[in-house]
Each structure stands twice: as C-alpha cells, then as structure tokens.
Image (cartoon, helix red, strand yellow):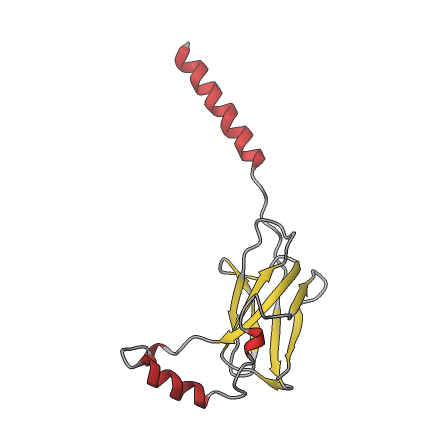
Length: 149
C-alpha cells in the first residue's frame, strides 16, 4: 500500500509539473542588413539584448553579417527571434580561424585593415554606449540597421 501511494504521489506531481512550465516565446523570422554611412557592413557581430521588462525567457541573440552586410537571427539554433524590443550592439566580427595563433595582435591589425567600411564607431560597441534599438514584430521579417559615423 505504501509503495502504491508513493507511486501515485509521484505521478500526480509529474503531471502538475508538466503543466506549470513556462512556454518558450514563439519565434518569428528575422533577416536584416547593417549599413554604416549608407554602405553594407561586412563581418560585424550583431548582438540583440532584450530591453527592460522583457520576458525572462528571451536571451541575448548574436549574428554575424556576411560580405554584403546581411544577417539572419537564430535562437538556440532555430531561425528567428521572439518579438519585442531590443538594444542593438554592433562590434567587430570574429577573426577567421586561420588567423588565430600566437601572433594574433599583428594578424588582427592587418586583417581589420582589409575589412570594408571600417572602423565601426565605438558608440555601437557596448550596451552602455549604444542607442540603437530594434523592435521585432510578427508582421515584419526584414530589417535595416543604419549606423552613422
């Protein structure tokens, strides 16, 4: 009897827990282009940070622009992002794998010098400095982020 009662309590507890979990926000497709001074910004890292009051399940999102300044946001490996307001940070993208070694400083300087449409203004490089905002909505999938020098 004791074993049966214990098992019944476990089953009821599991059913209750399954119903209490918070649901993940529905994702909507997010594609965009980053322009600096009206020109595409290649190999830039884009970070979207949910603004205050956002759902707790929303995480910061990161994408890297291609050679034409285009990007696609993914969340946990799935295309899209939760609708809402985000603060946008734009910084230098990652170094190519073949340039990562003990001479990183010299190679990084040379590599950055070959990047188009540089430098990225420092005012976009951190949450404390950036005033660039983005509102993601279910009704829109293409976005343009315009940066000024």
